[in-house]
Image 1 (cartoon, rainbow, N blue to C red):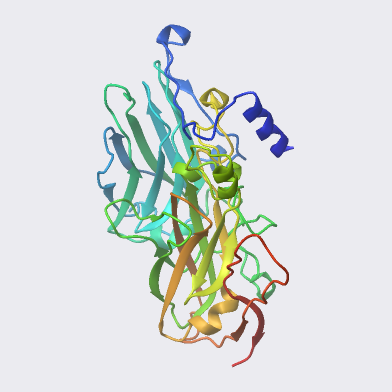
Image 2: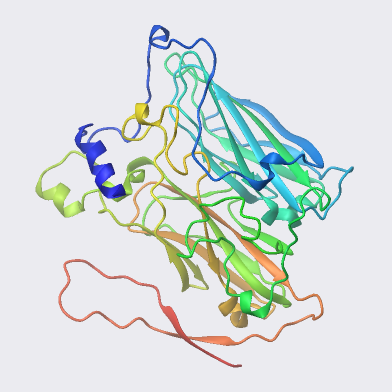
Length: 421
């Protein structure tokens, strides 16, 4: 059904392969009857905390993003509120944005202590102005939220000139709820629940339903960012299928559970990767486009150059995609709160809790410029032991495909069996 709808939209909004990937609407103010700011929204499940009064409210960021392209991200100090210390039953991030003028959609993200807590994109404004808000349950990051003297960082590269006049005004607030306000206790992580991923999606993919009370169980004891440390934001920029970004990590020896949370967004020639034609088709038809590589992408994760997980990302359409008027005032699914993807790495702990450094890498198969990716490693500790006993794994090479294929098959090696130490 969704495929039919997408084809229908493309059919009645013809574009050539050389058409720009993104559009912005420049409409005279006389076409807008409203003289006040219009609210834009993404249809989501309501947060259970929406009808509750928070125990504490902490404004953490207030900034206007004007001409910020090629500028370092905006950073503010963070410490938890002193009047309601941890532990909290829930913590909710409230993101409020407004803009007026002509502007493209822009990608943005928030990091706390280098760990990403929100991936979002902006709406395309009007001459009379628009506003929108995002609410996200960030209780899963409680171990970071409880720490003092961290940095909260936001990246939003925007261009302001005589054509693009829109400035994005951003306010971010954290709402904290204690046990007296939210009476939904965390259930203990029994042994039979250890195979449950952070999200509640049965496909093991996107955490599309934000705010589910028990989607994460008890928050992790430690969160280790797998991200960049440059002045262009903490995300890794993937420029092609051979571009793999890595970070060296040492896992605590008393780790009993590990979940990798992956953030992904796609841009440039790969913004509409799911509609890209094969390179052979472009060449044989002499098409003047750089949007190639075919219509399949897979984000994968390796540890010490061994394959551990992969996902085909949900095709989020930003507010400038296909036709900006489609997303006024209701934007596409995931445009304001891009999904994250979770992988249970607990089966690999036998190889990781050895006190040694390990190389965690992220890449995008068959990609073209460009993708923005990073990850958070959520770790649960066994506080009764200094070192846990875990099984190791046996890795076999993937068998070669028989017969002739018109393309080259390159697959990382996969885990098919485990064994005791």
